Amino acid sequence: MDYRYYRGDGPKIPSKWRKYVHLMRYIGTGMLIFGVLIPWLIILDFFPSTFFWNFLSSGLTVVGMMSVVIGMIFNNLIDRG
Image (cartoon, rainbow, N blue to C red; front, side, top):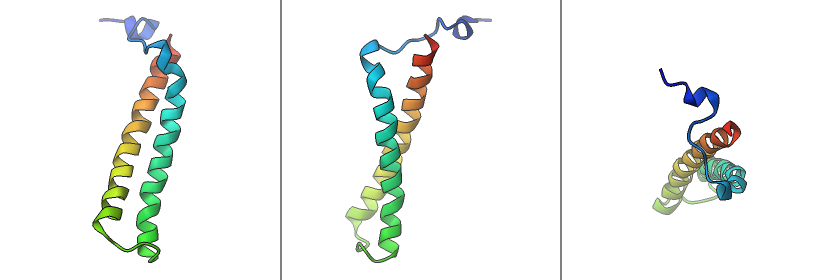
């Protein structure tokens, strides 16, 4: 069995990316919030239900979720070493 990941000898993230990991998670969280807020505003008749608003809310939700998950993975790699 390979124990190198438990010792902290596993994959590392480049040092120039370390300062952007938290920013990636914050931007992803903002995208998730707006991706959920836009359909509520459509339901409350602040925006018309058009293809643009529906596509924007779906896209923000998916991209925000992916960036939060990737930011959490990168944060775990940073904390390793």
